[in-house]
Amino acid sequence: MSQQTGALQLLKSVGLFGLVWLVFLPWIAERPRMKAHLNWLDEHKINPSAMYYTELEAMEDILRRQRMFSRNPAVECATH
Image (tube, rainbow, N blue to C red; front, top):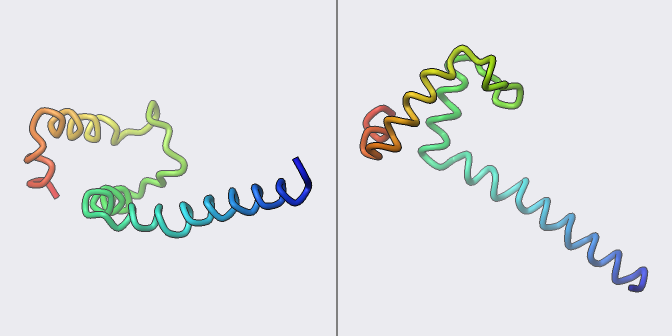
């Protein structure tokens, strides 16, 4: 592989990473369900980047809501 081909592959990889980071992830964060979840985390002063699920007091409520949603998807819409 030539140095020019390697540089082009690196540029493509960085471009793809940038596209995901700057376009796709913000788009996902604006989706109604994700936005509701992020708002809930903010309201409970939970930093998602520092969550340790085994130590999080609010985890029982989160697991309960997930179990309820997995049984009946309409419940999730009604709770947000």
